[in-house]
Image (cartoon, one colour):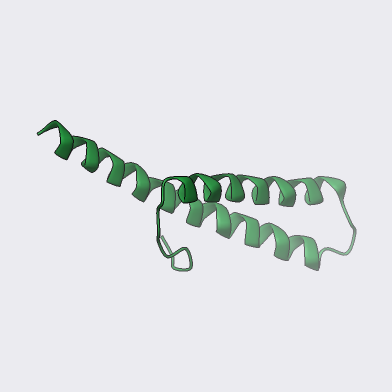
Length: 76
């Protein structure tokens, strides 16, 4: 019975990780679009884009470590 609970919790955390990755990827894509369309090159905007990228790839590494596979292209 405990083993079933363990796998259920793991699946819930994996699902929440995928949802968070989808959201962070959208944020990163939005930051890139804003940075590209910006007339003035702002250091703060560049830093915001790099931070969004770093957050996404940190979670990406975690998902690879946990051997999670999923579709990140769709809406959450």
